[in-house]
Image (cartoon, rainbow, N blue to C red; front, side, top):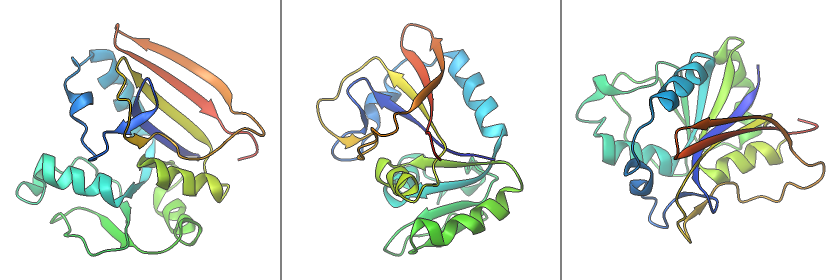
Length: 184
């Protein structure tokens, strides 16, 4: 079991535009190999951690409140938030106002030996890192720059440095970089 931060990022290190928009990502042509990569990844995930902005983006852009049968995650999802948010009917959601370490053991137990996925955002992944609970970073780097926005990982991680464990090229648009965090 490992805790993995898996996300897409622009070449200059942003996961979303300043207004949390992901339009920059969805304007890129899909690559079949990326779908296969995601399917292999999600098959190993037993529990998901999600920030409130990511959850709200899903609600507003994917319309899961109106179409709850389209909710893509059968795994339990912990939404870390400081405010009340609507729940997708039938989804296995747990809204928490607690710090990451207080919820981690509950997530591990629910994952049943599978991985934990920190889906977004960068600050939430940083909180897992700060608590020594983040094991791996998996970044799908897209061939665009945003110039500003929501940072990939707003933390300084220099000592010890990360270890590059895998690089995958997907078409002429994406590269997937996988890093292990030493000491995690």
